[in-house]
Length: 187
Image 1: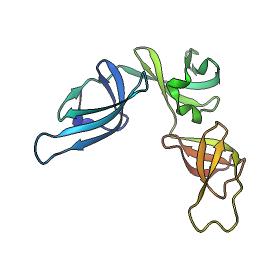
Image 2: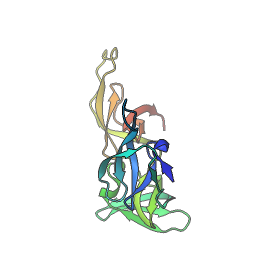
Image 3: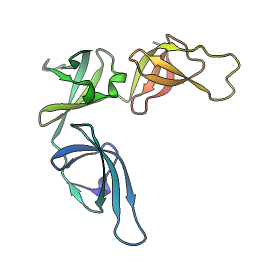
Image 4: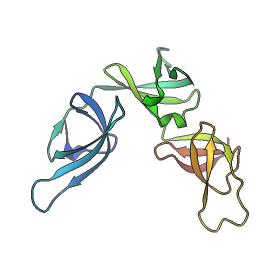
């Protein structure tokens, strides 16, 4: 059992027999009255968001979730296809199940798949991925005094704000949680 004092981002909870993950939370200590925790939750099955307030000390069950290492194979009109490297079982997820994480998926990339009651419901990406820039405007000489950024379209279709010195064909390390440019990488 988990209490409100144990809350942290990414924690999985079972609320009304549905698995949720905590997107954000805030412990509130008013001058009068009891403490409470205001949370933003995401349903792991439907993807819908929920805002709830819980009394301090409320207890929750941990959902029966299982994590399995999988490899992303390809995507087509049916969805995104993954394979378990040990059992060679294949699992398909729809675009709605994994959006916006699909913007950071490359073929043969390792991911962690989340199962709830033996049903695949979500994936967890590595913290960073290396993607190639396919389209960006050229930078202008002498514009390096300030931290100015320009949009760059990556090979997977995601658009990231990058410094002016980045050009097409560069490989960039991207933070998958925030979708931010970290550094240029030589491959």
